[in-house]
Image (cartoon, rainbow, N blue to C red; front, side):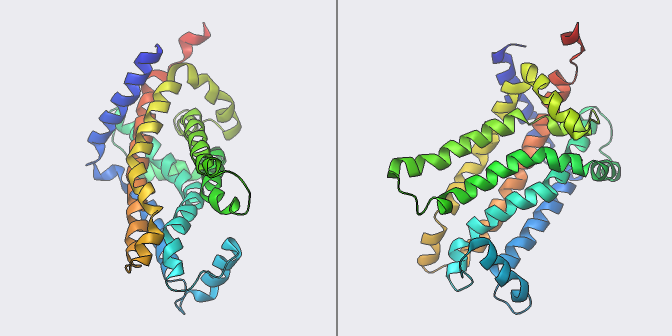
Length: 282
C-alpha cells in the first residue's frame, strides 16, 4: 500500500467509525472515563468545600506550588488543572478504557457481538501492559500542559515562548501516531508490553501514514475547545467564573468523543492492513 492509499485509508476508517457513534454498547468504557473526569473536575472546582478541602487544598498546593484555592483564582486555573488531571487520569484509567474499546471495536468490525464483560475482563488482565505502553504519550502530554508555567521565569523571545508549546504539541501528535497500534498489539495480538513495543515499528510500513491522518484529524476536532480553554482567565475576569466548570466538562466530553473516534479508526486500520503482515516475511 503506497502513501496516498494509506492517507485515504486513514480518512476512510475515521469516517466509517463515526457511524458507530450511535451504538450504545461501544460507549461503556468512554462513559466510565468521562464520569471519572467529571468527578475530578468537581473536586477541583469545589476544593475549598469543607467536605473535600482536607485533602484537596494540600494536594493543589503541593502540585502547583501556589495557594490557588481562592475565589475566583481557582476558576481561572480550572480548565488548565482539569487538563493536567486528564493526562494523569488518561494514563491510569484511559489506558484501560482504550484497551476495552479496542477489543469491542475489533469484535464489532469482525462482525461479532461487542461483549463488554469479556472486553473488560481481558483489558483488566492486560492493564499493566496497556499502562506502560501509554506512558510515553502521557509524559509528553503532561509536559505540554506544564510547559508555559515551567518556562515562566526563563528569558527568551516571545516568538520562541509561543512556538515551544506548538512544537511539543506536534511532537506529541507524531509520537501518538508512531505508537497508535500498540494497544491493538496488546489486545488483539495478545502481546506483552515489551514485545508490543518491539513490534510496533513493523506496523509503520503499512499503517503509519494512516495513523498520522487519524491522529491529526482527531486533534483538529479537539482544537477549537482546547483553544477556548486558554481564554478561561478572561471569561472569569468578565464576571462569570462558574462558566469555567462548564468549559472543563465540555473539554472532557469532547476528549471522550475524540478518543472514541481515534480508537475505532486505529482498530479498523490495524485489522484492514496491519494485522496481516505474513507476506512481508517471505
